[in-house]
Length: 471
Image (cartoon, rainbow, N blue to C red; front, side):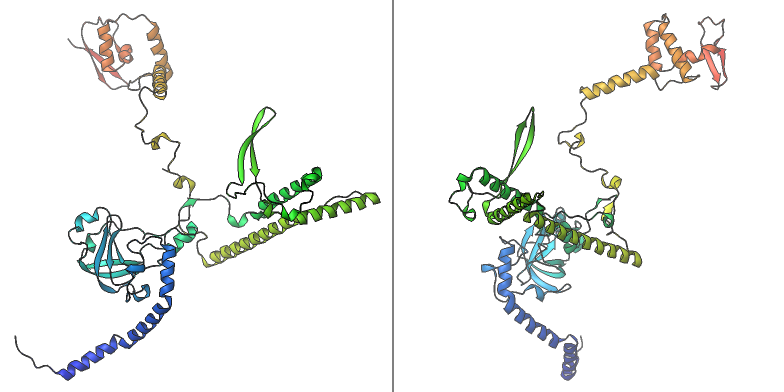
């Protein structure tokens, strides 16, 4: 090695230029904003952590005694960042968790047989160098920070990759969940009707409850007219339930006998607190007064609609308007997609019923029974199949035989042969069964003066066979 003279001034100039290129001032501004953000949101994040996660598990936010001052929050990290950490936990089906100095531990996805190849390279409490691959929403994803191992460099030994990162199924629909987590749609059976051509609906879900309340009010008022002594000295607003009302068991299913048959019966229980008896009583008194005045005039009186009925119509109208607006929005969306040349449906959302249902699990099929080993040989089904095979063979004959005639003539020849008395011995029958060949097709080619002692040889083709004696 040769000694070189070092110019300190030149080194300072180079260092100051590199420092300007990496943006130290910008990083200082980021740290200042980050510390202010942590100061204002630390307590809120810890409170949300207790609400979301009842119990702590690796990969989730540290809180309580596990939290220490100076731990980096999630905004401090970004994909592509290189960190030095320590392995804290190893899980067979989830992977390894690395502490990189933050409130969330990083997640290295490893599962199943991949541990066989890397079990000697990664241990608990060992120091590793990792790269942040992805940063995700902690409310939706189980492990917000996904890592990739750089040292030890064993990423090429991990083959069983997670198709999608693990998620929480929280207070949302399946479609919203898969959109939030970036997953493809669940394939559904293709519908024969188009949604934009469906009729408008006007059945608000609260209408059934209003009908139940109205029926209960009218039943109580009818009971007041039939048994006025039960309600003497009582105010309608002070009526209480005979027994404690249980909303979960408000619907009772039973059976009732009607003539000679038993029919299902549904009992809907309603609390008096949900009823407006005073308003219903006032309305009935008003209708009675109108009816009396109409009778005095000699006119027929008919109650048009009760207040509850008008309320039901209002809810149905609200639902109809909402359905109308949704259909208008759908038609606009379809028109825009057609104008831009975009697909009308999300790719992969619908599939043909034949493709979708092929190989689908059928609980009624014996193939999916846990103890299914095929149909037993002595079962009724197998016996019927054997009998049908024997019957078919007795009608058609053996399929391995070759006949030099049409099918109908062969069947007639076979029936005539069965009716004719058999003069052959049992040994000849066994030989014929073993050969499995019908020699009667050559009877018309045997000479009339053949005595049966010398063997015959057939040659030629099937259309024109020839016979000669073996002397």
